[in-house]
Image (cartoon, rainbow, N blue to C red; front, side, top):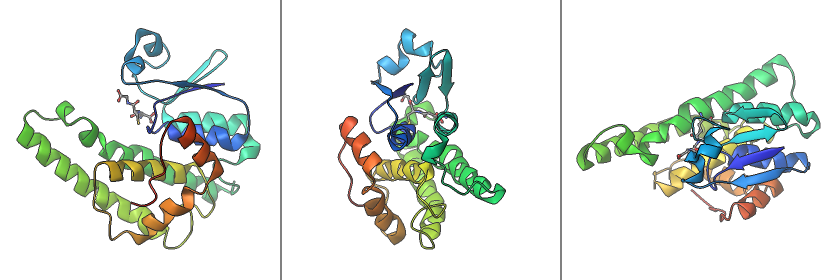
Length: 209
Ligand SMILES: N[C@@H](CCC(=O)N[C@@H](CS)C(=O)NCC(=O)O)C(=O)O
C-alpha cells in the first residue's frame, strides 16, 4: 500500500493510522507542484492528498482512506474498539464534523483568493473564518472535558482534531479559553505513531495551542 501525503496536511491522519497498524507501507511526499502534476492527477483528479494506491485500487478522500486502512487492518482498531451501533455512529459523527465542518472552515485561510478579490475583502473573510473555527472548536473542547479522547479511546478522530489545532496555531487563532484542547495537544503528542509521522514529515511538535 502506498500513501500520498503533503507534510502537515490532513493526510497526517491516514499516515498516523498506517503507523498504528504496524504494517509496511510506502510513502510518497508531494509538494504544492507535484500534487497538481499530470502524473498525480491520474491518481486524484482533485489534486489533493491523501490518496492510497494499493495494487489496482485507488482511494481518495480522507475518511475513505481511513475506512480502507481500517478494513485492511481491522486488528489495529484505528476507529476504536467499540463496534456497537452507537460506538460506530459516534466515531463517524466526529469524523464527519472534523472533515466536513472544521476542515472546510480553514479553506478561506489557506486560499482567500479563491473566495473574494482584494486585500480588504480577503482580510475580513479571514477574520470571519477564524471566528467560525473558534466557534466550531468549542464542541471538541467540551467533549474533552469529559474524556481524554473524543470518543473515549484514542482514534483517528483525535489525530484529525490535532491536525486542525496545528493549523489553528499557524493562523494564530485565539483559543486561550480552550483549556481542554490545550491539555489534549500535550496528551496526543505523546502518541508514538504521531511522533513517528511528524519525524517522517519533517515537522516539530507544537507543544501547546
Ligand atoms: N475533501 C478532501 C479534502 C482534501 C484536502 O483538502 N487536501 C488538501 C490538504 S489538507 C490538499 O491536498 N490541498 C492541495 C493543495 O493545496 O493544492 C478529503 O477529505 O480528502
